[in-house]
Image (cartoon, rainbow, N blue to C red):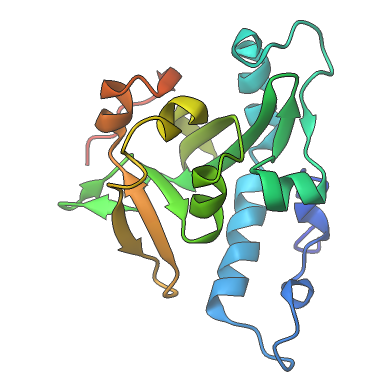
Length: 194
């Protein structure tokens, strides 16, 4: 089985490291990590779709078929992994232990910087579905109202972190998102106690 054949997302299944730009025949760790993480997360697409439809009223969805995959342009420029009647939905599924704080998984909202962070700050995207998984199980998810988030100072006051490949990201405490009422729905399917 080739590496893309078990991928559900119609755009990610076509992505290869070589498609990410001309780098003189060499790829970077960041490019390879992007493709690997995208393919890993895309295996959750059927479950993400079910969760989104279970919460359809948030997105103004009243009949099947009103949430679709974003086009390549919607995904790249509008935080539109999915699109619904009320706008675009960013989707991210991360390993539970991808971001550790004080030796424990930090289930906070992490945003790639500057790409995704700038788009959100510039008013792109309406909703964000953010989930954490362990192995093949989504253990917790939140739906963030990006319009509410932009009205707070949380983006400006976000913390900086670095991926193992040197890529920068910003993170916002999940508790802060709750305090500012930016999280409109959540579910914890399993309590992680390391």
